[in-house]
Image 1 (cartoon, rainbow, N blue to C red):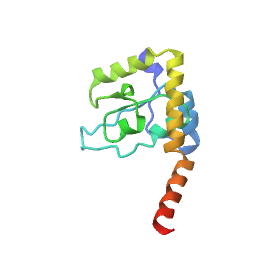
Image 2 (cartoon, rainbow, N blue to C red):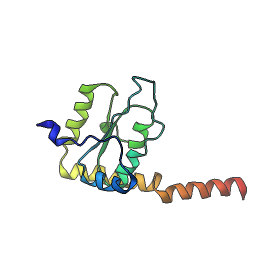
Image 3 (spheres, helix red, strand yellow):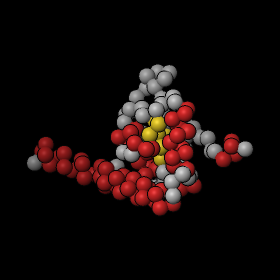
Image 4 (cartoon, helix red, strand yellow):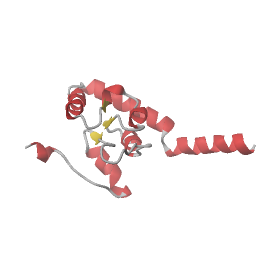
Amino acid sequence: NLAERFLWTDSLDSGNINYFYNTADLVVMPTTGKYDNFKELFGSVIPECMLSKTLVVGSDNGSIPEVIGNPHMIFRQDDKEDFVRVVNYVYNLTAEEKNAIIEKNHQKALRDYSAEAFVKTIIASLRKDFL
């Protein structure tokens, strides 16, 4: 039964997020603008997954493609067939290919989205503007 292989959740408190990501084989960010023209401005779920070394795929809504940074991991929003294509792509990756994507994502997240990266950005901005 396919439903038994999925965990559906609306939200998690911050204490359980890393546990959730570390138990997942794949996290899906299916943001859509279909009902209210919503555009995902950043989507912190994606870098959280990347920092937790969890594979993540997402729709082409807003900044999701930019944050994920891998066109193979992006599906057209509201397109079930394209979503299935991307999930099949991930499913058919070898362990080596998955690990390479995970490591590349992790390095990108450390460089661009970690707490340390944010602090460096703030310090650089303050130096530029005030020093």
